[in-house]
Image (tube, rainbow, N blue to C red):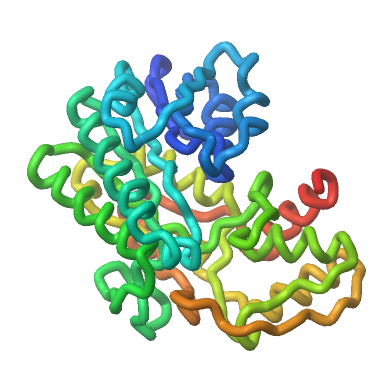
Length: 324
C-alpha cells in the first residue's frame, strides 16, 4: 500500500520542520493532498521560499519562519500538533567537515530542542531524519541496523547522536521516536545549485546545459538511490507504527545499488547526449558503497517502497527537463 491510502484522525496536525527544503516540501504537499493540516517550520537558511509560497493559499497550511535552535520557537510550533516530521538539518558531508561546530548546533541541539518540545506538548509521534552516513567505514553490504563502523564526518556524528537521543526519549520519557536513515534521496525540487548539491540534480543540470559533470573518484562507488515518494511513505507509515517499533532507527532505501558511472550513463541516455565525464579526486568523508537492508522497516513499519531506481529516475528526469 502506498502512502495515499493511509488514514489518520481527521483533525490530525502534522508539523514538518525543514518544510521549505527538498524532502520537507514534498512531505507538506503529500499531506495536504491527503486532506490533513500541515504546519511548516523553517528558517529558510537552506530551504527555498518558493517551496513555501506554493502552499500559502491552501487553507490547511501554516508557515512559521523560525529556527529549531531556539527552544521557545520549537515549543510554540508543537502546540496542538499530532505528529512531528523533523527534517530540519544541514546536509552535506564535505560541508560538515569545514563547519563541525555549526553542524553540532543545528543538527544535534536543533533536533534535541524539537524532541523535547514534542514531549512537553504531548505529540503522538516524533519521526526524524537520520542518514545512511551513520554506517561509516563498515564494509559489509547490505547495510543493516546495528552493524555500524567508525563515523567519517561530523555530519554522520550529528545523525548518530540524534538516534541515541531518539532511543533515550523513548526509554526515559515514553515519546515514540522513529529515525529515518535516508539513503541518497532524489526527486522533484532537489536543489541542483552550489558545490554541495546532490549528484543527480547536479549532473542533470550540467548535462542539460551541454556541460561535463565531475565524478568524484573512479565512478565505481555505489549508492542506494531512493526516490522521494518512498521517503514520504516511510515517514507517514512511521506515524502509524506501534509504540513497540519506536526508539529505533530504520534504513529507508530502495534496497538496490547503482554505480555512479552507470547512473551517469543512464542520465546521458535519457537526455540523448554524449558527454564524457570529468573524474576528480574522491571526496573526504564519503562512504564508498551504500546499499540498504530494508527488512526492519518492512517488518516494523510496513514500508514497501513503490519506486525502484528505473521508475524513480524517469520521473525525476522528466521533472528536471520541465523545471530547469
